[in-house]
Amino acid sequence: MSRALVAGAGIDGLAAALALHGRGYEVIVFEAVRELRPLGVGINLLPHGTQALHGMGLADALDRTGIRTRAIEYRTRYGHVIASDPRGTEAGFEHPQYSIHRGALQMILHDAVVERIGGGAVRAGMRLDGFSQDASGVRARFVGADGTTVEAQGDLLVGADGFHSRVRRILHPAEGPAHAEGMMMYRGALETTPFGDGRTMFIAGNHDLKFVCYPISEEARRRGRAVVNWVAEIRHDRPRPATEADWADRGERDFIDRFRGFRMPDIDVVSLMESTETVLEYPMIDRDPLGSWGQGRVTLLGDAAHPMYPIGANGASQAVVDAVALGEHLASASTIAEGLAAYEADRLPKTSAVVLANRNAGPEQVLDIADARLTGPDDRVDDLIAPHEVEAVASRYRRIAGFTRRSE
Ligand SMILES: Cc1cc2nc3c(=O)[nH]c(=O)nc-3n(C[C@H](O)[C@H](O)[C@H](O)COP(=O)(O)OP(=O)(O)OC[C@H]3O[C@@H](n4cnc5c(N)ncnc54)[C@H](O)[C@@H]3O)c2cc1C
Image 1 (tube, rainbow, N blue to C red):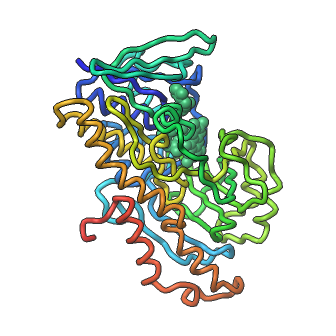
Image 2: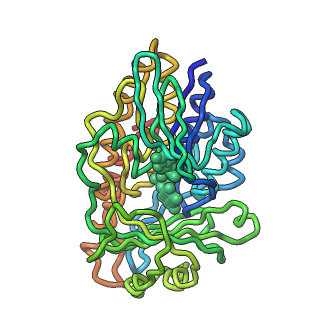
Image 3: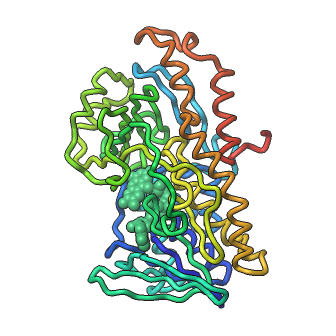
């Protein structure tokens, strides 16, 4: 049996573990942090990501945990709904879109890995430090929390170690710094009364000052409540550099003042932000697409391979699609190096296109079209954007992100 070493037990590393185990690989996942905790706040899984996870037998767990998102509304800062885009099955896709807590999704994947592969499948507190490879296999070196070094031998190594990937740095030592355009994101989640139908998300404002809001807990929804995830995005005069990007709460709350002019009919966004205890801060950063990902028996997945702006809700979705594609290409190739090369040839151009589309506001271009015409709260929606402008933006992004409807 071939052995796969996976660096990183985030969404992607765990999804890769399940995909490779399903293809008959022995899998060991090495995670840098000592204890996996359900960190982060909300993320979205688009139909192509959901399809991958449903294919791994996780539909029931996802349905119990996440919200099946019904629609996404694009709004002006005064609450005009300029576009309402049905999502998932409501939009005719075979699979739903879920809005879900990132940590809860990570724990669903972790539990499935432990149940199917065994308790020893995830080794926490082991940070990948280096690797070497030859015709017979790959040797990876991990450093434990106490500084001890452990080596592991495998047939392939998957770098699923996120934005600051060590595997990527070793493979591409000459790569330049992360790309940033000066936006900061502040994120939180708060249990409160539901807004709208309890299954709709909205994005309001424009490219420089934006508020994103969606419910993420099915358990709360069943109790008549909502765990509302929010993201405030602001063009910042002193954005945090990528080297310090770590999803931490640094106590910054001044940004809330910038949203005092926002008026939503169904939720008070300022009081939502002010009442949230923990606010995670993260700069809007990505990296230029690489010309290649891996070498021989080593490859990259997820944020290690194609970190992208969290616009269009594609980060986690593309990551789990990578995991399934990796399993499929390895299964149909005659050698590991051939399988990894086929995986890369399949996924690199597709994900590079999404990285670049997200820099250009992805599906959220409609906000800027309407914002440029906005004069005040009494404007008529029809004067802000035309239906054909909305559909042109949405269908272009669906094509790039790989979740076209059957008719497209
Ligand atoms: C703590 C945290 C909170 C996040 N919160 C959100 C959120 O609220 N909303 C959102 O949209 N996205 C969030 N993200 C990012 C989101 O998870 C990813 O964009 C997406 O899911 C792709 O996942 P990934 O598995 O490729 O990367 P990640 O989720 O970043 O996972 C990478 C994993 O690799 C581990 N790792 C790093 N270096 C090494 C190493 N050298 N050796 C071994 N392991 C290593 C990390 O500890 C981490 O567990 C968060 C990421 C992290 C790490």
